[in-house]
Length: 363
Image 1 (tube, one colour):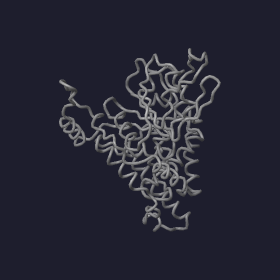
Image 2 (spheres, rainbow, N blue to C red; image 1 turned 135 degrees about the horizontal axis):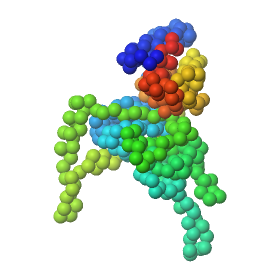
Image 3 (cartoon, one colour; image 1 turned 90 degrees about the horizontal axis):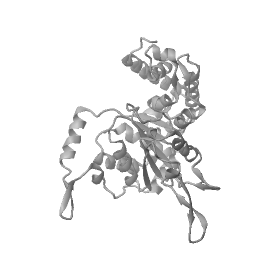
Image 4 (tube, helix red, strand yellow; image 1 turned 60 degrees about the horizontal axis):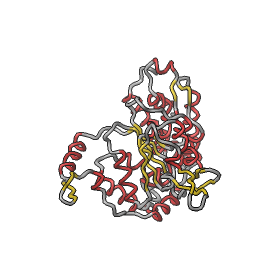
């Protein structure tokens, strides 16, 4: 297994996808035409999805897969962790999405001196009445951007646990419900270790998806520079400053919260077959039995996999999930929940290689 190559495993995984697709069609009664025809495409809210893509593309070049993952998080109520090098427009993308859907939006820059009260809020003594009143923190929003989440101390990271899992926070003796929808999108830099704290497994498991951003292509990077040159100046009285990409975001929303909620309801109607569920369970359980992993994926990973597959099917105009959805999302759902053994690390293996090998063996 240590001799596996990325190209080989990718090809094998694609072959497994096709093989399991055929099995799923056969289990459904051999109706191959149903998969090809794209049944249910008419139920998709094309205006919401297409308008959101266009609005984000107006500000962010490329990153189509990231936009899809953000939409999956929005439509399932799941949380998303974006991991990538500095300068890949992670924060800009989340800002663009929040303004495009008219969601209330808060951004918290995580630092070493941040306190839990800075996120969830606290009780403040009102000197006029001599009574304590609750001061809500930035977590009371629809879309919370936790920027560089791994720079905060563990006690601050843990302050998000209750909010992410139960959609409520406790301040003093009061348990307060968060607005609906409530989604956390966090970012972290994978290369800088100075002044950072690795997210514990309990925190990572709360994230439905962890997407790893890559550098743009040659043509995309050239387009980024061209757009930067065309931004111009922002005049302020007698002075002026160069405009930033954030100021290029159109503040006028292209979709409403009601449209988003309607799409969320339609995602819940997407059909997931028993065969698909069995494949999800088998994939998750195999991560717990492989000798190369100290920690495999929890049942929460299986829930995330079927829910995210539902949303991806809806985005692609289908009212049923297919194995393609499972394999497209497997790495984003499972990799951050897997921990290698020391022996596997010594052999130079990666979690990605092991997961792809598991998917290849499923055939």
